[in-house]
Image (tube, rainbow, N blue to C red; front, side, top):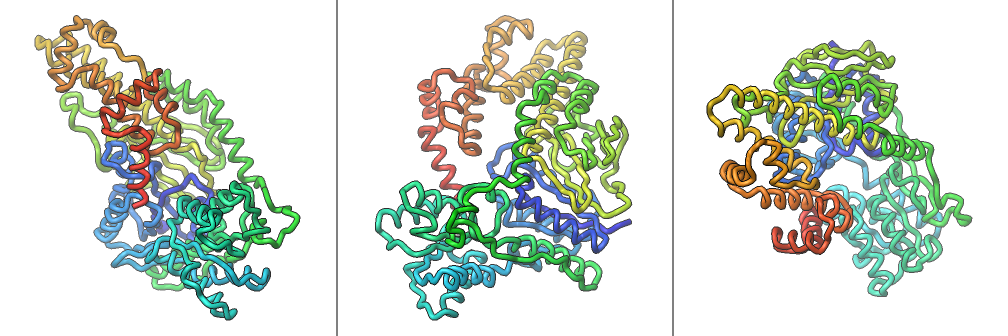
Length: 579
C-alpha cells in the first residue's frame, strides 16, 4: 500500500492554503505518497456544541492509517485544539513535523523570514534610495515577527543606515495595528517616513487603504511593502510590492523532512522560487499600470460564488424529507462542485441514533464502516449506496491529494465528506463548507423525521401519556434552536401536538425547566451572539436574522441577556480573540 501523509490545517477555502496544499501534494507525489488533508470549517473557539462537532474530524487520525503527519499549528485560532492534535500524534508514535510553527517535542519547517524580509527592505534602499523606513512587524517575541525585524535590521546595517528603535512597531499581523500606524502618521504623532515595510500583506494593504483614505498618495508620499505574496489579496487595489512563495517553499520542505524521518533518505525538494513581486506600492511603476488587477483565478471564484448564490441547491435541500430525496437533490446540484475530482458523502452506520436512549449519540469518532450515500468518480460517474472502511480505504493508481471534512449537526457526528484530486489540480470552492453544512442539516431533519415517526408508533402503543410528549418536546426544542428566527407560537405548537395550550406550557416547563417563550428568546439571543462573534453583519441585519422586526426591542432584549449592548459584546469578542 502506498504510504500516506496526513496534513492538518485550517483556511482551506483560501487560495493561500490551497496553493500550499497543491505544492505539498506535488512533492508528496514525487516521493510516492498520498497526501490526506484533514480540516474543518469554523476557525474560532467557544465551548459550543457546534465547535465540538467540527473538531471531531481529527479523531480520524486514530481510525485511519498514516505513516507520518504535518501539523500547521499556527493556522488554528483554537490553540488548545493544536495541543490536542499534537498529543494525538505523539500517542500514535508516527513521524510528525510542525509547519511554520514551533512546538516542544516536534521538529519544524519554518519560513526563512529573515533573509527574505532583508531582500524586501533592501529593495527600498537600493532601488529607491530610501533611508527613512519604518518596520511594522508582528507581535513582540513571536518567531516570525522577530525574524522579519532581524531582516529589516540586516538591510539597514548592510547599507550603513543607523537603526532607530522609534521606527520599529510591533503589530498583530492583522488590520488594527496598520490602522493605528496610519492614524499616527496622518495625525503627526509619527514623522512621515519615506517607506513602510510590513510583516505581512494584510497589514500592508490596510496601511495603504487607511493612508489613502486620509489623502496620502501611495507610493508618491509613502511607499509600502508587504510580505507573503498572499494570492487572496492580489486582486485588491493597490497591488502590493511583496515577497512571494515563502510559505510554498516551507511546505515543500516539510514534506521532504518528513520523508527523511519516515524512510531515512534525503529528498530533493521541487523547485519553488522565492521572489520579490513588484507592484504599485513601492514606486517602481510610476504609471500605476499595476495599481489594480483581476486575476483569472479570482474571476473564476466570483463566477463560482455567483453560481452557488443563484442556484436552487438550498431550496431543493430544504424540502428533503427522506434519504432518497436527499440523494436526488444532491445529484442535481453536483455541478456546483468541480468535476475534476472524486467525491464521497459518507454517513456513520448509527447516524439515526438510538430512540431508546436519545441522549446517547455519537459525539466522538466515526464508525469504522460507513455508508456512502453518494459517490462520484473522477470521470463523473455516480453511484448510490456502498460502503467504505476507514481503517482500509482504497487508493488510486497514482498518488493523489484527498480532502476530508466533517458532516455534523452541533456535536452530533453524522459522517464525513471525502474529495480526492490529482496532486497538481487541487481546488476548493469558497462555499464548500456551506454546501456540506446544508447536507448535515438535511441529515438532522431526516433523523428527526425518523424519531417523530417512531414516536407516533410508540404513542399509539404506550399507556404512558407523558413519555411520548417528552421526546416530542425535545425534538421541538431542537427545531427551535435550529431555526429560532421563525415565528414560534405556543398555541400553534400545542395544536400540532394535539394538546391544550395550558397543558403544552406546563409540559414544556416541566421537561425543559424553562418556559416556551423564554426558550424562544434564549435561542434567538444565542444565534445573535454567534453572528456577532463570527460575522460582520450590522446589528439591524442580525436582528432580522434572529426573527426581530423591531430593532429597538431586539437591542433591549440583548442588553437584558448579555448585560451589554450588541456592539459592546462584539467589541469584547474581538478584543478577546486578539488577546
